[in-house]
Length: 167
Image (cartoon, helix red, strand yellow):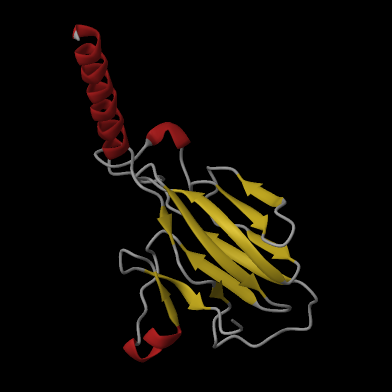
């Protein structure tokens, strides 16, 4: 009988520890709908499209919130082709300005680090001759409230880009 009681106590301790660990780890953020090019931009002649991802930056960190292990600059992210599942490019942390990435038309999954220690995930659609911008850093506000129907909003209420109009 004492063996059963100590087994039950051990299971309870393991469950409590697991729940505490999961509470300490920030949850990942998933942006539900795909982000596409701005409805205001016109398509160019290029066969490829462009992607610009604005990630969190710890260039001027608030010491109480920043995770300094990334170094100075924007945090890293990866771009994965949804059709093939292949990671097309990984951008390392430390960029001062977000790079412009040329991609073939299609849908891509972006996985980015955040200063809070969580991972942000979004789907973007790349269209020929157009620029898709993804604002994961909260740097862009919506501006005109009439544009809200075209806007893609993150779970925290921040503007992250334009709703993919092709889906």
